[in-house]
Length: 304
Image (cartoon, rainbow, N blue to C red; front, side):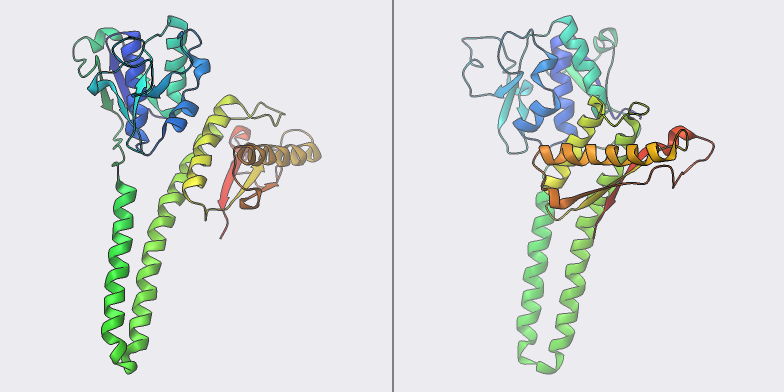
């Protein structure tokens, strides 16, 4: 999968700071809790403090202690407009884990030598790759304003024609059509995101013959969890498939267990069980007879 953002940094800790900034550029609605889930404390056990990320106003980030980045252009701005500081302490092993982990979010790191030629703003800079365009912060809010404006306009038209009973039916038809347009826009947004997450999940393949979720698969499912939290109307069926290699009965059971493992993980993270279904189809629906690896996949189907 192609990288979307490249981070140039002048030092290990400055590059780690740049990775956190890159994540917030890609996920501008993320909260401190989301950031901590994306880059957990286990990545940096040697930092000397409890958390990698803390609110800027919390104890330990003021001038009496220099353990966190705290300059104005170093702070992260979260989706709820709160400011967050990133820890400064990064040993070489912790930094290497952070760099490896960043790849899960399509973030890559440039060499320090390259960064020395152009590092800016807190000792790092970001470059967007492969045509990637960051989402606009507040885009979701503008959609709500569009919804509100539409309802006000429709309400005004309805009130105007209320004195003309013969034309009332026409007004009601126009209102239904306009509301359907808004619903369709919302649906397209999360349909595209589900397809992207499904692709990422299949890149984080299962171990051959097993149904255990890999760490990479769990990180992808974390993105799916966030999407379902933002769209409570979204319901999904996870369908597992295997290749035709081996025993058919074993493959059927394995496909069921893989789909159920993903559903169980989402339920354990707070997604209501009634919004999720799982199904195994074994090797009954191959997509490429000549490539067994391509047939080992899980599909995310949106339920109407």
